[in-house]
Length: 622
Image (cartoon, rainbow, N blue to C red; front, side, top):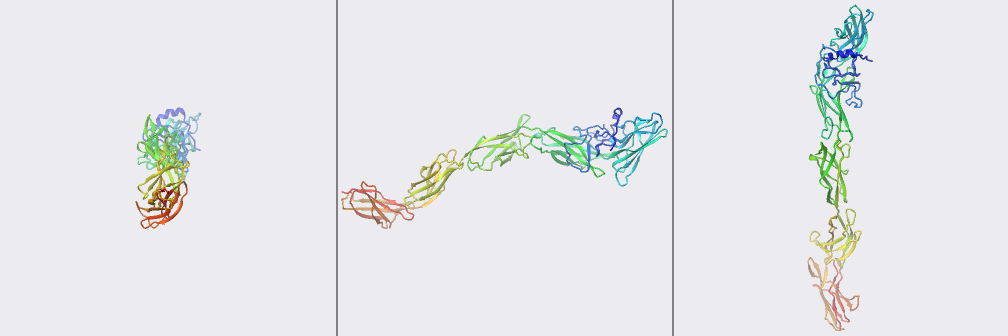
């Protein structure tokens, strides 16, 4: 355990001004230099008051770490306002904050010298101070320093002590700079003294001193005063020198790796002149951080293989959070079903009473649409999935703690989306029969799963299924959107589809198209006569059977035509027989007139043809 000097308050006050020429020191591995007040800190000028705020604090550790614990800073944390003078140590300082004289001279006037405090000069570990008193004037003080480490520890004799305070009978003596020491390290000190009447005293193991290079700092600065949305970087600057207590020289600490802790870790290396200028952007831990502790430090290797942690500078920066807002370019959008929802606008923050555009802010719309504001705070978000119905969308600053801006409050804005629903029509089942009736069966619905309120569907026909679509008529679906009906078509060959006009909330819709290839037929020029005719006489029926070829009617020969008769006052028809048309489609059939009635010719289709029915001709039988 090292001894600590107990300095008389009265003597310290008297000698404080004499220490302005003493070089500054940083503490060693034990947090204090032997024989000095451990609360003292090194200055940027070794000749300044040893209590200057630029004195670093160091702590020894066998396992160096570049990440000090902010919660347990070393004793004597550096001030936020360092002095800037460079150290200019001197071997012959005008005075020093030396230990007080022992005030323990023998009262009877006889006896050997008595030692008081022994230790390193508090302002410069290159000097040794000894407090000694005797019954007569002390004439000589010397010391032997023995290395505490090494296989063959060396012992160095230090002589030439001079009185620096008090009187020769009771004063403090100071050695010359101990430039003869073989190396840095810890030394065991034995002191000797002799007085004018020939008495002498030695004190073995009087103390232990550490003689090691000490860092000296100048022009230290950590800015800004607070972190906010416009000041998100921390700048650390200054200059570090290394004071050698053996030579008394001070040289720049060049090429030294420095560690910065500001929520997370950063590192930098000092320049050739020992200066550093570090710019770091702390990533605040959490969205509700109120301050950021900043520490700048490095490690010095000790002769025994351990390392000493040196705190260069530290400061706690408050975090100021500014209000933010999102201004959308629209309060509502109208899109067709199948389109994606897109929103745009600007994000801003309030600073010094003015709303300013916020660049680099992460935003999201739903979980899947993400963007970062650019120049002017502008952004565009596109939701990757198709909405199926009307709804409200929310644009907000990111809720992700990693992406969110910790210097801005969270904000959001909403807009409405009106989806013009798609109309779906299924022409599920259809055919054209031999009577030229088109069978229509299917359903109508919308993309939102509902049935459009306007359930009217138009039947359209086209010759080629591509152009020339014409509406043949319309019908209304059932309340559930289904339909099942038949309708006569005059041209049973071509393409058919169903069509819905749509409305303000529903798009026009088309069904799938169907194709049928039946050929239309007809009986033209049908006549039953003569008229009137006598009962029992002959009624002759004639006509021509034709089929549609393209857009023209042509003869449909060699086909059988049936002649039907309906007696006056009856509802049923009677087949009287059939006749085969000639190659020109003409046919003639004769029958005996029996009673008044209506005559008609009928072609019953086969294959892909359509039935044909002639004009109804009434004959009066007398």
